[in-house]
Length: 409
Image (cartoon, rainbow, N blue to C red; front, side, top):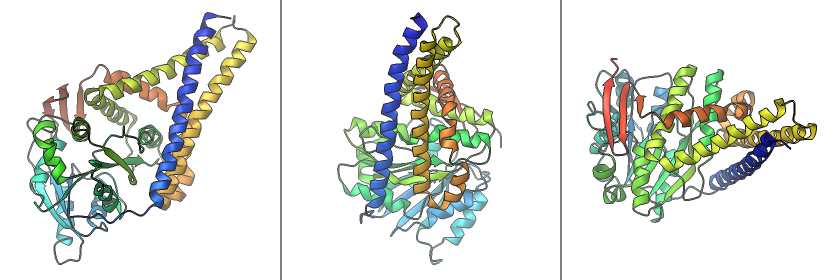
């Protein structure tokens, strides 16, 4: 029995346990999604203030913002925030706001705020703070969302309703990328939904900035503006830290999974993916370390397994054992991908025909996603600079960010 086989056996069994646990968590996620979607939303719907930072215009912007403006919710303010008046999105946003003006029959009061350029924090956080200044003081709930996702008509009510429970401090949804026709969009969908399925009813859920809500009273009590958003690029991780520091609870609401589509070049996707994990490394180092360890285990097990398979001196039974164990591990990963495919079909029934054609990519990309993620995790261990919406930042620490420059429009 060779040394490589012994090392592989140890790593392979550890990876098998990890993969089985991951599949079990995927099944729990699906059960939680189904259970929550089968329950009534709830009647708690106080006046809300929704802030959405917008940067640039794309083909789906108009439809996305229109979806935010037509929520089935009794009363809410919608504040759209751009960094400056030259932003290409201003024309589209102004036209939508005019259509939704009081008296036009629209169910919300919408406004546009020009925030100006950030000096000591990420542009998104700066825009959120300026947007909060425009929220009516009577709003009992503050809601934050992203313009690149399209919510369902009951998104706002679903996000706010759990706050009726005083033990819940923040509610959150998450983005759910749908695979497109290109390889990169399919890779992005498989990559990102592997993170989405980490959400659940457990206490370790983290808020996602594209869909999160908090009572205005708690936002002030936790001093989010003064302590956590003063010099940061991460609105969600820092809000999550504020909740954790105060012993609060973050609740994931499956009804607030929002469909997203994004196509790009492979280089653009890798920069985006690196940015997600660089931010995680700075603001949630324990979460980053756990992810790095999991992906290192995966890669080392497979590398050792391939070495055994390619070594002439390896016994035949050793090769069979290695191949069988690797096949089982891959099957477990693909099974979790199949869960994501099934969940996507359930939460986005309007996309069922499209998912019937491309939904298989959620599990077919199982062979590739772990290696891409390993690269992202390793890069995050050494890099502290990111580019976000044309602004370059250096994150000196979790409470100090430096703006390095801005790309001209």
